[in-house]
Length: 422
Ligand code: SF4
Ligand code: SF4
Image (cartoon, rainbow, N blue to C red):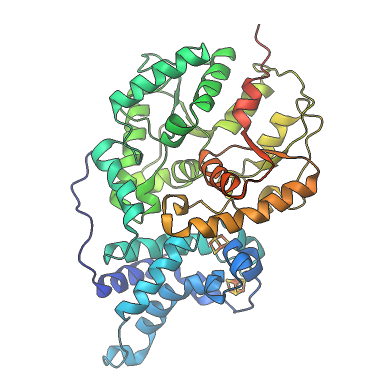
């Protein structure tokens, strides 16, 4: 399936209203009715925490859709007496829902009404994008998926060259389009281009555990920038490439690498996006490695290094895999220390939901990182590890900018470096 839908232009506020009403007519209306304006969510949001600006309150991010919904329900609306949404307010919301929310879900944890602000922000992004209000840089990354197969323009030939180089460097095999493989492994172009050692590390562990796996040249990119940019057509294109490749290979398991939103999109939304069940099971790499360790197929040397773990929001809080990361560390890292606020309550890296791809909030991301840096320092270690390349990219940017004395590593790399191979 290829995508023939052009990027929406020009700006048209009425299209946003139309989309809001479609979303609020379905499953989101209860959320829009439920907010009791208690304000408890404010301090859960890293953007509010570092700015103290009320516009970053999670409840305020419900506002565009709530406003369109309430107007549509007002009897005066039927008489044409309610003014429509104005272009300038929609332009202001564009900044808020694209740059000002990482869709991390932390606010939902504290909301007494259980409102899923991240889900509403996702639907609001779709409405604004349909009306022509979107950040150019995020949309350019999404368009690259259509034109070049990936947001970082990793075409099939770039993939093949890069994997060959990584296989040589890591001294391991990386099978491509292997017939009869039972497991399909996917890559994120962020890792492939910026953190190639993590791809080599994952390959090394899958080989050591005797997994019959492959990467497919027909569907390899696990990130889904169409989803983040509010483009359901591109989200479906990216998802279809993976699903079709996995089903053509006949695999029963598909692994998402160290990328949070990639896991969240395929694992929790893949079947809805496709409109049918998937013919295979989706794992995040931490889940898959934990499964291999439980089956006795992976063993690690214990290490003395003290470190802490940054939970990627989409893998722990919204993914349910917080315990698998800890299980992998059991017996391996006796000096592991938890941050005070951790696991499903973790603080976001500040770059999820596509915010990392938008230049405008660079300074904001760096300020958000100060929350994390303080948390790490309080553990008494100076190293944190994580399992998401996007978190890593976001925090590495801040580490360099702030000349922070601590260090950030990848969970899969540290495990592969201490693998016991027969
Ligand atoms: S989902 Fe995260 S970033 Fe978005 S409003 Fe809630 S806490 Fe803030
Ligand atoms: S915590 Fe929930 S109910 Fe309270 S203001 Fe925030 S979104 Fe509304």
